Every structure is written in C-alpha cells, then in structure tokens.
Length: 260
Image (cartoon, rainbow, N blue to C red):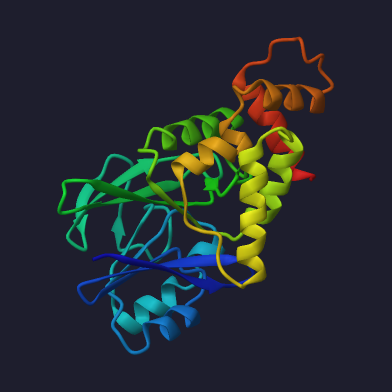
C-alpha cells in the first residue's frame, strides 16, 4: 500500500514523502533537514523533481550526499542523476510512472503521475504537479506564455476525475478567496473555502485535492464558464458582450491574481 504524506518546508512548501514496502522517495525537496527528520533513520531511496526553482531543489545536494540516492528530474537541473522528460514511462515503487511536459510556470516543468492498481482492477492516479496546478489556482508565468500554461492545465484536466492532486504549496485559502471573487455564484467554491478554513485552523493541510474538485472550483480551469469569462473581460476593461477566447480570459485572470 502506497503512503503519501506532506513534509512541511520553508514558508509554505510541501515536500511529498512516498513510502511503500520500506522504500522512501520524496518529491521536490526544497530543503534537506525536514526530510532527514521525517525519515527518522530510514534510508532515502530516491528523489523526484518537477522543475528547477530553488524551493523545489534546495535539498538535493545534501540529501544525495547523505543517502547516495538517485535524483530524477529535468536534465537542466544541477544534481539530477537520472534525467527524465515528457513521454517517459517506467516503474517506481512497483507502480507505473508517467512523465508529462507541462510548461508555463517554467519551461522545464514536468508532471509526474504515479498510478496504483487496486485488487478490484481500479486505478488511482497520483499527480505531482509542482507549481503548475495549485488547489483552486495555478502558478505564475515566470518563463512560459499564457497559452503554454493554459494548454498544460487543460492537459492535466484530461486525467481521471478521481486523480489526486499533490501540488507543492499551501496556497489554498488565498486561491479560494480569489476564486470566490471571480465566480461569487459558485456554491461549490464557497463550501470548499469554508471546509479549507476549518482544516487550516486545525493545523491540517488542505491537500491533496482531486481533478474533479479543481474542475469545479478552480477559475483557471473554468475560463469557459460565463461568469468567469465576464470577470476576466471586466478586468481587461472589455465589454463583457465582446467575445474573448479562453486563453485571453486565462491571461486576464493570471494578471489579476498576480496583483490580488
């Protein structure tokens, strides 16, 4: 049975800790010390990296030095021992792993999808999406274009509705407040915000979410919804009756969120 738990790091990062059959892997270790503490003497089997930003890679050097473990990630990253790229398939922890290119936040950004198969033949995908898709949000466009990010997000929504989404930051409350501003008539967003506030008040993470939750509440995945499109047009100072395409709406929302 696969166990996936968050290791809090830095200000609001989560390093995801994967454990199965006494093997331990981590995703996006922004620092080493929280990982070493969480392992509590167990060996680290390997590291997975989604993109090159330091808050996702800062722990690589120290962890590799201590555990001599492989580091899988984009070839552009110093310290990666096993370069991976979109289209790669291999087995990890006895499970199928697939890599997708999802540029936008950075040009080297990868999605890592690990799929469990149950005894009943059901599959449960686990999506590690770094800073591309957040709970009720998406990452800033540091390197890619709005169209690249929009296309990457659309690609992620093609995953099964029940796919679990493990993003790398606890940004949920801020994202949901923005989502409610964009689409105040969305009762699902209002409930998710209330539920997330309860979790955070109890000191609990709001993650993982699911693809279904994101499709229902994430404004960056809802640019085709009239209320969201009208909000995006209004931010651009456009007459809401003028037809804007979904990439233009997305770009407007991303600019708005940058200054929200």
